[in-house]
Length: 418
Ligand SMILES: NC(=O)c1ccc[n+]([C@@H]2O[C@H](COP(=O)([O-])OP(=O)(O)OC[C@H]3O[C@@H](n4cnc5c(N)ncnc54)[C@H](O)[C@@H]3O)[C@@H](O)[C@H]2O)c1
Image 1 (spheres, helix red, strand yellow):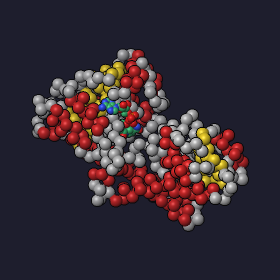
Image 2 (image 1 turned 30 degrees about the vertical axis):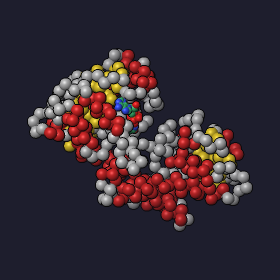
Image 3 (image 1 turned 90 degrees about the vertical axis):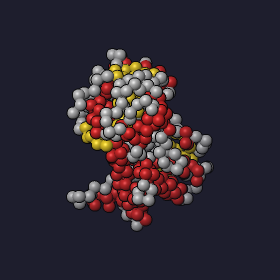
Image 4 (image 1 turned 60 degrees about the vertical axis):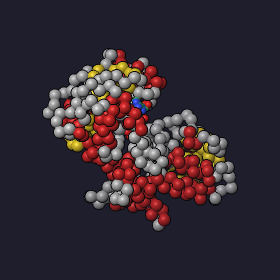
């Protein structure tokens, strides 16, 4: 086992993952330089502020900056370890867009002197960490990279995927077990010595591609299981059965634990990462692809059902509750609820459509340009509602009393009011 890492760390990408990682290291005595291409982000962090919402992060950032352990810059510094935590979205053909990882690697490569550790934290298809090593080798022929040498390399390269839950990042970053995959064993050991500085969970050392794949598999597992529940909801609806009752009964089997159906799957992890597996083995990832398709089709099905319900009324008011991608967060990225609302508005451009979302005071960009959609408080919107569609099980909506729903057509995609 390597000793605990000492030295200076550059965290590249100060988003939901990079900034908490920087804080975790800085508060344990490591000198951390946060690097981001976004000047506003850098300014905010340098002032001890957080440019987005995540519980407990603000106090961590102001504390780390206050004691002088965390600084922020747009210029890549020299450092002993580099942690790359930049976005990895997918392209139109659903393959991974590695442009951000490449750009970050290029700026890191320019600063290497020999002896450094480079860790890719971004969720990536198998082989990306080795690709990082190859990119560095091309840019820096003066250095020996681990994919190309049996001996001790000049630079150590590893992957350490992140599995924190938004809303609990500051807790889970410390307590979760972590997978650390090296291009070589030595690389994994080096990276483990860095994460051991703050991680209290187990550190599981493996090879880089297995670590990359394990992260994708975790999210594909969730996606496939949610797709099973969503498919059951479609079948139950067709058979005029209550899916929640069916699942409740089935889950009494000692080895059955079916998840909850919903209006689809959102967020930028579960709805994205399984495609990286499909991209890596298109002919083999049949179940994973189908699960994605089932979950992606659910918002359109929900919208069709709502549109069908409006035919019973002359000029109905439809109220959709929730826009976030899941309960009790403000994140609307890849949100199925937003898709449902957009699809209803597209199908019925003259419909009186009200939306309640307690975590925002503005409609997301995807809903701009549709004048028939109005953002209101749930309370206000329910007064006029003929049809109520529950899309997100925020606590605020769970507490709506049944009497408020009396006489209205209710379509509950989350099984909250059964
Ligand atoms: N957010 C999560 O809950 C979560 C969980 C697990 C894994 N991940 C993965 O972690 C990675 C980062 O995700 P995130 O949510 O932190 O993204 P984010 O969009 O919140 O932050 C990424 C940051 O990187 C910066 N950036 C982009 N290119 C850069 C470059 N060349 N140099 C320096 N900075 C650059 C951006 O300006 C941004 O501030 C992704 O691969 C994501 O899939 C995220």
